[in-house]
Image (tube, rainbow, N blue to C red):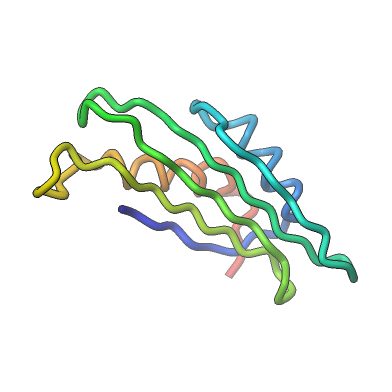
Length: 109
């Protein structure tokens, strides 16, 4: 498992659109919720086959602006090759990090 967490200068809906356009993976599920007062939360779930681990890896992307600035969390899982060992040749980090690379020009402190 790998997680990437950062804040961006975009609305959650814009985050979802950019990630969907820029990510080379199968979109499995998408949902968004308008919480009122301009606040929203959205979730994207992707799957991608990684040859190096001979497995499909899942990526969950959550974007919300509940506390003001939009926070993005990208969590990848299911990338280890076996039941006992959790070694994945970097597939999990690559998948979670791809969201940060897509949104890099919008990242704020």
